[in-house]
Image 1 (spheres, helix red, strand yellow):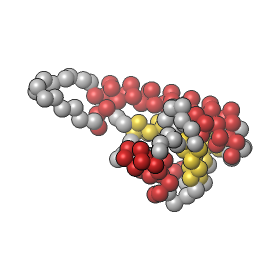
Image 2 (cartoon, rainbow, N blue to C red; image 1 turned 90 degrees about the horizontal axis):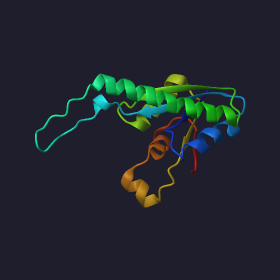
Image 3 (spheres, rainbow, N blue to C red; image 1 turned 180 degrees about the vertical axis):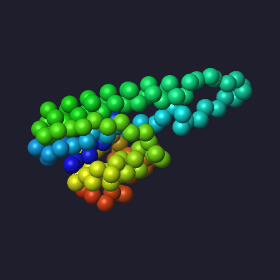
Length: 146
């Protein structure tokens, strides 16, 4: 089982396709990690409260996240994987740690993730899910450049 981390960006698409080329005939799970609306905090300087149905917002996000994971699975299948199961997972506590936790649950042989192509300085300042996954994974990680 291969875990493909997929966020739907143009940088992630080559990684999903490359997974099929690198691991032909293997099964995979395509994981899209999203941040639930209810886990974010909104602050207003004026004290005006914005009323939002957090449960409905979370449900809509899960639906969108599932569609993104399905798109990644289709790309991976087109690349040559035997099967690709889409999976949308809320970030807990952050994207990189969630990817690593899912890899553990699935007992993934490897993680495939795209790179945003940030310069070294930008990656240092902004952080990078791929960077965190590479440095904290106990299994092989394939980082596919954009």
